[in-house]
Length: 511
Image (tube, rainbow, N blue to C red; front, side, top):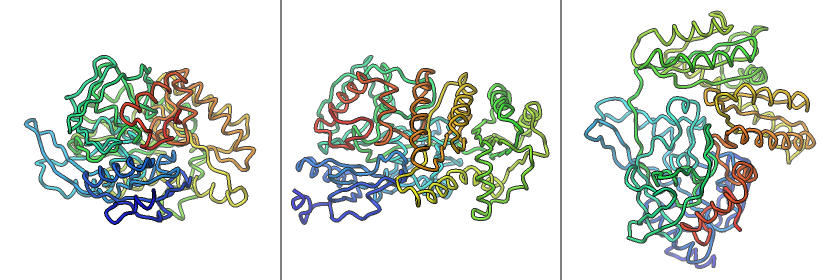
């Protein structure tokens, strides 16, 4: 079988380079061969070859995910890393700008290209902003990734106009937003070759919070949205058309320290309630850092080059607030400073950044936390090789933000677990990183994570707000939807991938 796959006209090669057997989850897998297609035609040919031999396929982008979605479990790999070209820019009659790209282009490369491109009469940008800018656009769409500015702009799904997809048998499916809809939960899709795929969508209750957990399904939905966030289990994204936005006139970043967590949470609530008063300026992001996060950041200054002020005793938590400005009007800065003062902040504890160098320092502040967490766990793995951090990705509705943080604190303090809490507090989506010192603490942390997931689901939240399910969180998806709904998802997958060859073992196990 492998010999046939590696024939002279095959796109597959062996052995597989070690880097392609792992991703940022730190998990490692196995695979027999790998293909690096450079076009839709080559991708379809690789899929047909694997299907003819009955080999499962792991689809890879930039392998920046942390849920092990890109880690192979035998079979073959299709890497989209060489499908990294810009394919076409257009504007419609209303001046809306669109850009067609291959899935392997990175977010960083896209941003560089948009900054240098003069074809649009006004500056444009692509709003999704995951922390890792080396992430590929195809991977971002497959996981519906988001980031800090999803508070204002939503996740990747909200910025995709069209997809070209390769199905499990190598057939091509092109979908454009607004053209193909489900009828209640019944769908009928025609591929580019004219083959019709028909079936029923599962009846799922979508969470009322930010979510990237499993298939996104609603009655009468635009069928384009089914494939965004499906983690490569229904089809392979071969091309994307992105909907771009006019670039803000300027960006204002604000970093403020507080004495207590309650002060910071009250400030978040006040900003939400008052942000619309300064339209057309947009409150783009609100990021949170607890005392443990601040300790890690201070420890990272010598290695990351962060120029942070000398810490004051009352600096126990911090907020980073970002505004997308429509002009040079002072209203957003004035509003922010007033609300900070009302919530216990002070001018002496606040920094404003309005130029690129200053903004980069504040953004580096955000990125330093996970970097230091990973370094700390790497050190502890020397004594316990199986040890990993436990990082949550849970989100809740607005009214459950304070209750979920109280639950985290009470459980962590009772268990005596070292931890840091940081992240996208504007979306009620903070990452609890438990830092176990041995395998017993790791087991305790796993039990807490499951307990929290059950509570979050009961409150209408999501077990994965942005990282996806991959191979590591299938038990959490089952908590969120239950066995019957998971079985209905399997049946939906079977309509597009009857042999379960595309990314098997992601989201849920085969029967």
